[in-house]
Length: 208
Image (cartoon, rainbow, N blue to C red; front, side, top):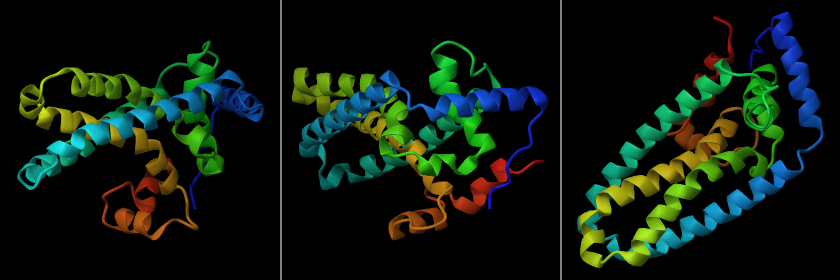
């Protein structure tokens, strides 16, 4: 199972603050997460409907290439954000510390805590990040002429796939800490390293 990182006195103090804050479930933060997940899912659905006419056999290589590029981009930036939130700032910072840094710090004290979060808590912040980009894409589909949309379809395909991958990164992270009851398709994707494997991610939580 996961090895829990030992903490210094300062880190222990911060972690006690994390746990104390995590106990009472977060009022407005919960409302924000529900709102962001709902809006993001609506925008994803509407963008899919507008993209569907452009998904033809001759565009399939473009779609596949953009999907692969988006996976690599999302993997890089999710790792960068994870490192930054683990390294910089304090959970005592107003708003950002309590609501956005705290889950990262708590996670290294109790790596399996993420498995006890529901879908909304796990994914709310990631879905929030996708909303401006999905809104931009939808605005373009509604207002731009078809000729322009055809020319910019590879970029739009890449940006849409990237937002979708970003929305799922924390869910994929949660699956990497879940050792029982995973859907078979998730285990398959993990075993082929398409998404973060459980055995591979375990090294991240081990002491050097």
